[in-house]
Length: 240
Image 1 (tube, rainbow, N blue to C red):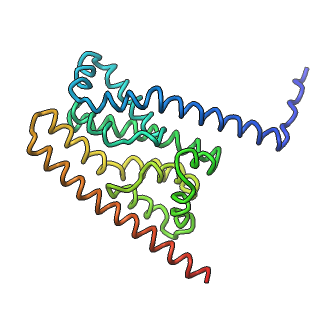
Image 2: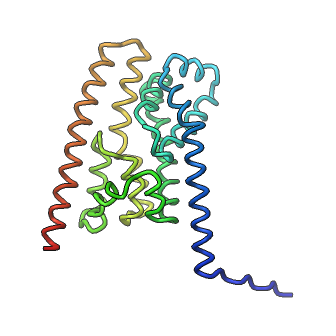
Image 3: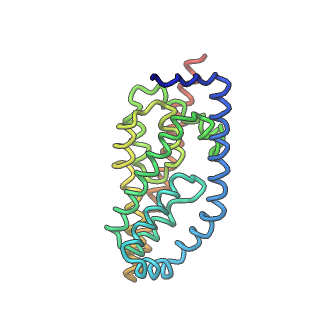
């Protein structure tokens, strides 16, 4: 006895289901950002209490932190630097960097596949259309993957935005996995090293580390803006 064939959904039904799923995701992210994100960020910004909690939780403290980092990447409204500094303070620079990178990779890939499924509407949850349009040049750039790697590698660039745009501009899952696993290391290290110095009460080194990080991030942000402006100018010249 053959099983009856399931009727295919109409295009209208598919669009309704997709819109409903996206709406549920938006509501869930807003709730998580308010209920979990705000107190979580405040907690991580109190390094002593955070380290005490980590020490008391044992191995589960690492597991919980991976969840924290995953959530920070997925909910782009939560800034990453305080979490990374807290990781350096609580776990030390080396282990803190490793945990941050594992959580970041998992979160980045989750974002990639979600955006690839729902398209630019998913990106607009967190970012205004103007910022998204600034990166349209990545869609047609001849050296798109290399340029995305460079933008992710430079500290100070908006990595959450780049992560949400990656599937929109056509990066493959493999290319994005490599970029997010390698190119984000410098920006994470600069934060965890400073946090580790604070945890070790090496305040002079911590101040130097944060000052250098701030300088590099400022240069990186200016570089990012110049790259975007240069490609926008080229785009206008081609249209004319």
